[in-house]
Amino acid sequence: MSSLDSSLALGHSVARARLSSVLLAISAFVIVTTEFLIVGLLPALARDLGLSIARAGQLVTLFAFTVMLAGPPLTALLSHFNRRRLFVVILVLFAASNALAAVAEQPWVLALARVLPALALPVFWGTASETAVRLAPAGQGGRAVARIYLGITAAMLFGIPLGTLAADAIGWRGSFWLLAALSLLMAGALALWMPAETSVEPRRALGEQARVLRQPWLLGNVLLSVLVFTAMFAAYTYLADVLERLSRVPAGQVGWWLMGFGVVGLLGNALGGRWVDRAPLGATIAFCTVLAVGMLASVGWAGQGALTVIALALWGIAHTALFPLCQVRVMRAAPQAQALAGTLNVSAANAGIGLGALLGGGVIERFGLASLGLAAAAVAVLAIAAGLLLRRWQ
Image (cartoon, rainbow, N blue to C red):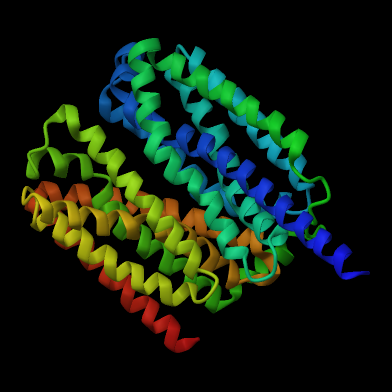
């Protein structure tokens, strides 16, 4: 093959990888918005269905723990499926689930509409991350995963706030109809433009794939992700409350501050994507350190003007950088089963999200909101210690 042919082939490979990353990132935007939009819709949804806020909030818990429990076995069972077809089916399932939520008149119907996408979400994250790595040029797999994780940042920045605003104009059912339409649109885009020849793993028995769970190195990295996400969401879950009650931000402006937190997160995603290919474990430790400082200072310096802004910026950068870092770090811990490893990290993340919310809520009830930064930073320090132990073991 001539040098010109080689250059053309390389250029085609890079273009194909970038197109796939963009399509998967937009799909991730739709999927994450579907997961978290309900937080902003809870009051209206609870009124319409005759539920208490506490009971309506259980829909969030139901989604998170379904992801945690169902993700690994489902990903292992579907690991041999053609990736393009699998992604199209997942987006169609999200479209149907959002449509079901939009027409739900009974709580159990809405619960079903939340369980179905929760089953598919971890399969998407595990296989999408693996697909991005496979399609990317050598040495750029981490950056490809980071591009997909831009979908999370975009959902936090635009999807969830805009969906909540749309609910004020067209009702919470209208927001779900909008998400159903977007899901179908992305299913069509993936069917048309996603490369069909993406390689997949040969079919293997579930028990054979489960052997990776015996690897202490993989389990150590999964447990580290649980600690990292527990630290992240012990404080992030209550960020709006911190802004309103401690920083004295008017309630009508809290949404703009949260959007600013997401904007800063774009830098965190870029930094995480840059460093993840070099040393994912070392970068995890470094960003956990920044996270601890940012959370502690954001609460401690609440209402201190520029100091508050600087602290929130540090927090936002670290918070977003840790998403792709944890995903790639766990996938590299099991190179022979990357899709399953990626889904294990998603399950660990959801376990951390649930534990973090419980921890943060307990700290607020017992010690007050001003203690939240210290508690979250303490968990981040535990994650740093665990990371250092893993690094020494490595």
